[in-house]
Amino acid sequence: MKMSGGVEWALHCCVVLSRAGAPVPAAKLAELHDVSQSYLAKQLQLLSRAGLVRSTLGQSGGYVLTRATSEITVLDVVEAIDGAQPAFRCTEVRQRGPLAVPAERCDTPCPIARVMDSADRAWRESLRAITVADLVADVGRTTPAETLEAARQWLRA
Amino acid sequence: MKMSGGVEWALHCCVVLSRAGAPVPAAKLAELHDVSQSYLAKQLQLLSRAGLVRSTLGQSGGYVLTRATSEITVLDVVEAIDGAQPAFRCTEVRQRGPLAVPAERCDTPCPIARVMDSADRAWRESLRAITVADLVADVGRTTPAETLEAARQWLRA
Ligand code: FES
Ligand code: FES
Image 1 (spheres, rainbow over the protein chains, first blue to last red):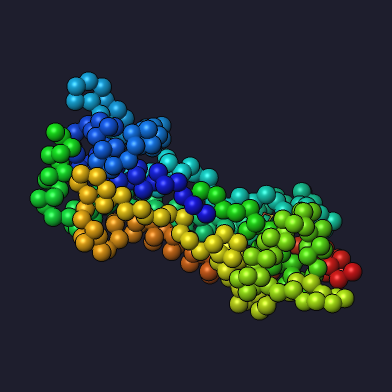
Image 2: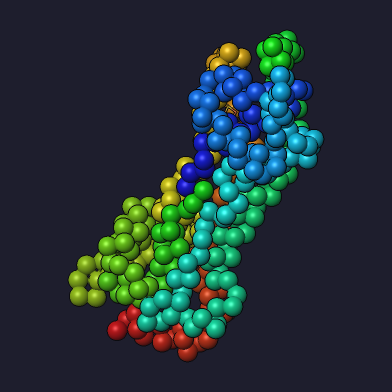
């Protein structure tokens, strides 16, 4: 099982956009992360489609978050990039073969599917409990103030 | 993010092997599940490599579980088939680009990676809390006794 590598970039972008405090052009975000513009553009497009970022036009145009970082959960970003489908998908194997359970008796999920679903819920709840604001605060705690200020300057330059 | 489809088959096989109470040939497991022998053989091989099943030789040979179903967690089966690697893998994007955090300051995981790790742990703990014995009991509760007996007969025939 492997999550899209774009999740790591997208979460870092959200933290950067929050810290920048002004629109950041896609090219600048790509340069900051030393990643190809086309790759990052794809992630920004997914964030935009999910309504988490939008791009502003004009001289000082660029990407901004659409709402407060305390209103964007890590799960929002993960689902924007990687989709909201559970990793486990029951294909009703119980309805196959010579001892198949008749379809009319399969109105409740298979016990196996239920277990996988509840693990999926635990995972999502864990990611829903943390917001981009929490990440920003955490990065702030672990990074020297002058580094953060240098970053802000660079982003606005 | 998508889990190997083999997980569903493998968990169903474990439940069946427990109910059979005797070795079940791979061909019979494939017939029962109406799936190709080669596909199921691959899943059985992964279960075997993880030490969860073994095959016995001879006339009435076939696959058996290697230990009590109460000693096999759903996580054991998921990791046997799908691997134990977390879905999110941090590639240290913080160490890239003009504002890179120097490697020597990256001795603790990035806050983003920490959040993803703790969600991964919640997911694994949820799957570790349920054993194949629990699944067997659950299937038993939701299946009529005569169906279960018919299944046992068919598996031993
Ligand atoms: S039928 Fe899909 S998990 Fe059992
Ligand atoms: S550097 Fe990998 S998640 Fe932040």
